[in-house]
Figure 1: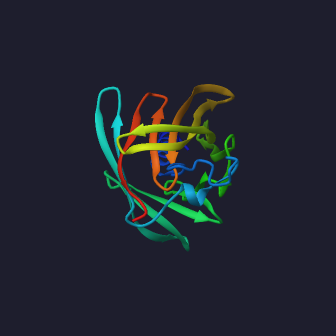
Figure 2: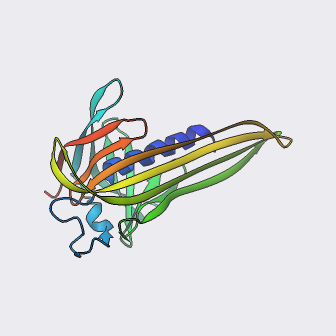
Length: 225
């Protein structure tokens, strides 16, 4: 798999975490257990047809808005997925299975982990781990990509949509590839991208900040109606 696909997958994962992993919030950031030791994905990923989120996206040179909405439940390979569209008309698909949330990648026709059924502060998991080697004529291309998520802490933040008590989550994506011929490396490249997302229970993603300083904050939302 070539770098273009790795870049597309990495970008998609970070956006999905920012816009869709929904959790902590309101006045209860230990999931009601009194010790902050366990959270449930069912509380942190509210999905229903008609629910939507709108964000203000700020980059180095521009400020824009973006929206996503859950528009339908669709069947893919005999499994029921929530379909979410964005302003560009692109659709993402999400599966809840045994309480665990997965996303479906149309490029590789496979699911990958977004958030486990239960988790706690300090927990981490590998959402996607790919490693492939392709041979074409006399060259060998080795490509890889790993995405890891870590729940770091709780934190109160204020955005245009209001003030929220949140979980702060770190996403780290590493990818690269190497092209070689006759045991000699012709070209190689690798990158690491990080992003933080603050998520609020029964509301959605509240804020995301990537390593290139792009920031998205919640403007308004329709959830639970």
